[in-house]
Image (cartoon, rainbow over all chains, first blue to last red; front, side, top):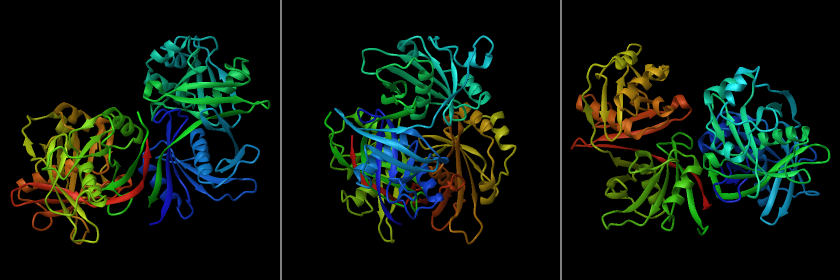
Length: 292
Length: 291
């Protein structure tokens, strides 16, 4: 058994418990795939990441990410949280405000900034493209899945940003927050279109965020996600393509997860090159050591 | 709410090695935590249970805990109590003794710590189990028709929760079983049971006496990794039939291997027919929590 540094975090959180939990194991050299998978199953958190020394030129550190079931090539909230721990541990220093994460999916930049409420970290997300827009008149499966979401201005769209999501605008925030998902119909849509499920959104005003989001993941998982970095990134790309971005200067703030006991804040930014950055604040909840 | 730092442990209960058993979150010195704060943190850890140490309210108690699942507070549960006794010993709240008393919402509970081996073993006295009489049930026949039943007559036992217990012809049959979860859910729902457990004896020379599995599909838990109450019910049923394995009322059960775990539950039926369950506990995470 070896003792390693261990941190448990709340990502996209302005207060403890509001964001998406993550475990990070530092000094991961010596752990094989089976041990990493076993630890990720044992923590019972959405993801557990393992930090290694980088192997590629230009990389600040290397990371591998595991859900309780399998290795994940890329995910937003584990990338943001891991960078936070690496900075606190002094394992890497940003160059021109950027860290470079070496992951299974390749090298990805993270932007580190300070704002009034502390450090924010954002990851550049893979480019997303529109697969198709949906027509609820002709598409019965789509119509059933979003029947209880009062329609907003934009049509439903299927976007692919590594994983596929249906993005569905709802008339207003109150209607979005009150909606009860039809899990059977959402799962049928997810299966029929090889997508994660439905990411519903509505514009918001006057409460410190610009967009309210709810992400419904279809079967077999069938749950509402607390804070989805990747789904929000595909949503930003969709809104950009329709010239319908909320907020100002390509930046806006999302509230997600309130309906499942959380209340995450995600900061989305679309830069001049059209790349989407997904980030926010991170809170350290547990610091210690893990013996495995 | 003031955000303060407290010692936080995550231990593995019924485990002879890290990752073998059932995880438990432990906050020490939680005297200044409000109930809502405990519940919020227990929801966030996502562990089956998180416990909080508090000063006892009676001189008869050695220590006091409150037990929370992500959704609610529990009056009592087996694996958190075994983990609590071990942590109380490690943190110096108690010294090893065979007469410790745990205070929890369900009341005062005797706990023993056997410190004679290389690692301490915790033993917890469990509530008395009894057989629940049931009428002929088509839902039971539907479950049993596909199982290689042997030994004890299948029955519904209660020691707080209710469990259907079905002995199979041997440990190999238990390990290889592909359960019909829909049929089990129908049976447990119809009879108010938490789940159904199968168990079987191992051949001579094994390092454990019984292989155990527990299925709770109606609670959305297809299979539970390590289950204190099930093992206590099985011991009571075997004792009642004069069919206890092992020596002098003591035996070792293995559960969770089919889920990638390797839970080890030490069971003892004492001279007064009381069932004690326990095992070893591994310290996996040791740190501070700020919440």
